Amino acid sequence: MEPAITVRGLRKEYPGGRGVQDVSFDVAAGEIFGVLGRNGAGKSTTVECIAGLRERDAGQVTVCGIDPAADEPALRRVLGVQLQDAALPEKLTVDEALNLYASFYDDPAPIDQLRDRLGLTQVRGSYFGRLSGGQQQRLSVALALIGRPRVAILDELTTGLDPQARREVWSILEQLRDTGTTFLLVSHFMEEAQRLCDRVVVIDDGRVVALDTPGRLAATLEAGQRMSFTLDATPPIDVLQALPSVRAARAEGGVVHVEGDADVVTDVILALDAHGTRARDLRVDQSNLEDAFVALMEKQEVRR
Ligand SMILES: Nc1ncnc2c1ncn2[C@@H]1O[C@H](COP(=O)(O)OP(=O)(O)OP(=O)(O)O)[C@@H](O)[C@H]1O
Image (tube, rainbow, N blue to C red):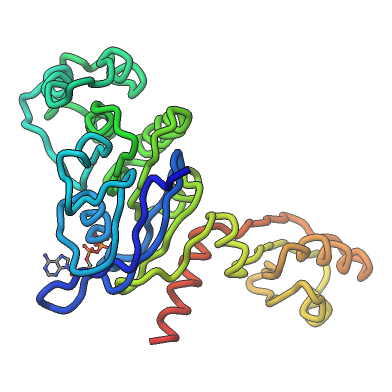
């Protein structure tokens, strides 16, 4: 199947010389694809070139086979966009906003269904300015989806939301997964990307520095596993450090901290048993995308 989005050798320079140097990736139809990177990495510039909001200097971009720079009307028929800080008038109600946006399209999504799906039925008569942050974001997702787009771009969807509202928006997106829409999600939150995205691209300094599933990214960057525990006996740190799966072991304030690869927990428990002691208050933290992201950014700093 043709990819929903292709980006090849994208370059966009600003007068200051920054922007996007060289970005390439494909997004498969139906994927939730994350665009990650620290502030100023080039995420918004990339996404704006895909959304036809910015002209690129070089490279190729297609959305469902359409070049955003060449055929804007065709692009609008396949693409829905929810951009950072897209505010609506305070005194527009939810239903008015939905009806207004629906009027832009020949064949909009049924409003009742969309309102229901996005959890907005109870606030259909409320002014935009009176909605909670989470409700405003859910409305902005509804508006991005009203034209039944094949591809939807969601930029910084949950920035500024409290943890509960953020989780509500995430669960809505999980439910939208089965609609077959392709989502391009720009995010600062690794937990969000880990939970929602099938694959992510990490952009740094205008270039792609990683492109993979969140799980594989966490594994290949060897963020590994961390465990901590207490012991009744003196911690046998040298014994633990000698285990092949252990990368680092130290005791601090009566708590032993060990980091290592996937086998570290079993190896440490067995080694302690052989040593005649047992771990208490055991905590194990699986490495996650956030660890991988931090490790990746540290690598980038070293390279500079
Ligand atoms: N209109 C502009 N004129 C000049 N420089 C710009 C312009 N827009 C962005 N830049 C610069 O280009 C680089 C990439 O910016 P961009 O907004 O794409 O990054 P980002 O990854 O989306 O950042 P953030 O997470 O902060 O939104 C930054 O160094 C930024 O300062």
